[in-house]
Image (cartoon, rainbow, N blue to C red; front, side, top):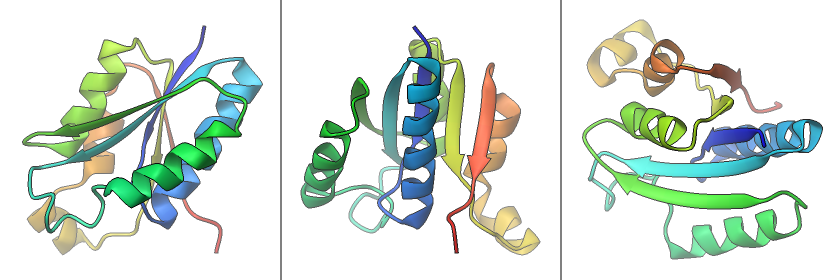
Length: 131
């Protein structure tokens, strides 16, 4: 069975990745493993889902018709956490939402997307929200 890992955040970028991940799972007859991760600053990290956001995610995924597992994690690097899950489940594809960052922003903050693109052992699909 095809396994697709989706790096999910509770925003438009995470929704774009999740929508495409579900579409890919339907096309490939596979399952989706959703990863929501933080560096440990969850109280100030807007991309780390709270209980209400997770409940909304569960409701959204319940009607998808695709087998879905949701994992939350905390660690030093969000990109590494997504890559660790991808390795753990032998992912065939990783789907991530892509946000625009300035070169200085990438230098100061790093780039989760870049880390995943360069470190993944499988195909990576980077998507942008429809504007």
